[in-house]
Image 1 (spheres, rainbow, N blue to C red):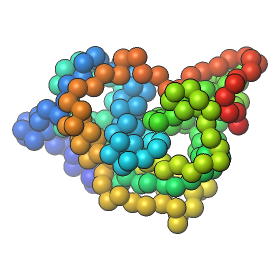
Image 2 (image 1 turned 45 degrees about the vertical axis):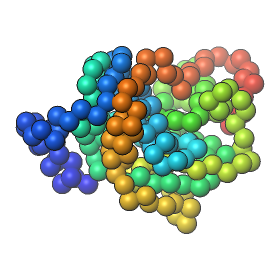
Image 3 (image 1 turned 135 degrees about the vertical axis):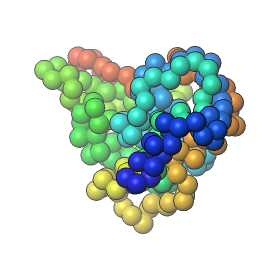
Length: 212
């Protein structure tokens, strides 16, 4: 992966017209890493035809993208690592267990999401720690722990997630950045100004959603 990343980072600095190709328009600026992470996850979920998508938080390398043209250069600035897209089949319970294991119950390690929302109960003494995870569907309905889900992610996550069963992993032989290119080209216009999928909860109030 390192030679791929180094090569493309060098190309990002030159004037090759390939990298200036406009893929879509940002109708409003992307003001955080989280907003760009939601975009990447939507691309993975849509283009892989999955129920859910997750992406490692710092795998998104930009924290701001202005309103206007989104170019090929921007895509490689957002996702420069050359990771493959992986499709995983797992139950809702296994997915929740995976989030607990992967995130280490730390806010900085909790992944970006698509197709699902998460409410994180934050530790009263250390606000970087997570005491509980509540999952619910995009429409606010209860997350079903018993049904099976297809989950799109990248090969970095599957390489470090020890809890995943390899017979349930399928490589799509497509870079995650390629899926983002396809998604943007098809959408033409994107707006994530009001999108929020991870919510923080402080205190002991009860939730009506499925809690870990």
